[in-house]
Length: 225
Image 1 (cartoon, rainbow, N blue to C red):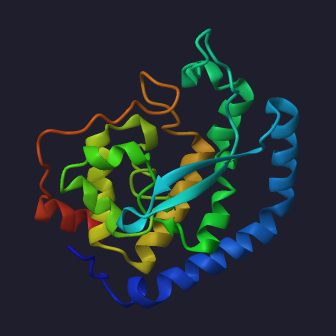
Image 2 (cartoon, helix red, strand yellow):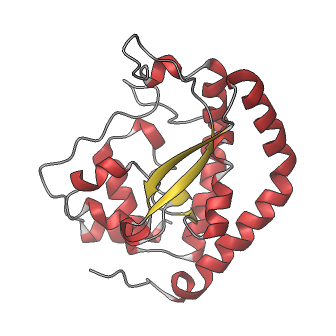
C-alpha cells in the first residue's frame, strides 16, 4: 500500500526543512565533527567513518554514515567478537552522547534520511517484519523518532515498531519539533542507551503475531505529539 501524506506539511514542507536543518547543523557542528573524527582516529584507528547498508523508504537500500565506535577485534577463527567486547569505553561515550551519529547529517542532505522518522535498522530484518511492522518503511528513516524518545534501546522491539507506525500515521510540524526537543533531553539524560541484556539492542528475530493499532489509543498519542 502506497503511503499517503498525512497533510501538506509532510507532502511539501518536511523534505526541504530536513535539508535546511541538516545543512545548518553541518555548518554549526563542523568543529565538533572534526574533533570527534580526530579522536576516533587516535583511539580506534581507521576507518574513522563506519558505513553500513540500511533499508530506507520503501525498502530502498542506502549507505548509512556513522563515526566508528568499535574495534575490529576477532576470534581465532577470524570472526568479529561480540559487540559488547569490541565496544570500547570511548565508543560507549560517543554513543551515549549520540556524537557517533553526526555523519548521518550527510544522509539527510542526500535525501536518504529525515530529521524525524523510524530509525534505519538492518537489511536482514526486512524479511522478519510482519505486515504491520513493515509499515515503518513507508516514510524516510530518521535521525530520531518516537521510539527514541519513548525508551530508545530500553524498550522491546514490538514497542519500538508500535511507536514507528504511530509516527507514520500522523506526521505533523509540531509533532516533529516536539520529538526533536524531546531527543535533546533524552541525550542529555543518557536514557535508554542499552537494553538490559545487550550493549546496544538484541537481534530482532521476527514476530509471529500481527500487531494491530488501537485506534482510540493512537488518537490520544497523536494529540500529545
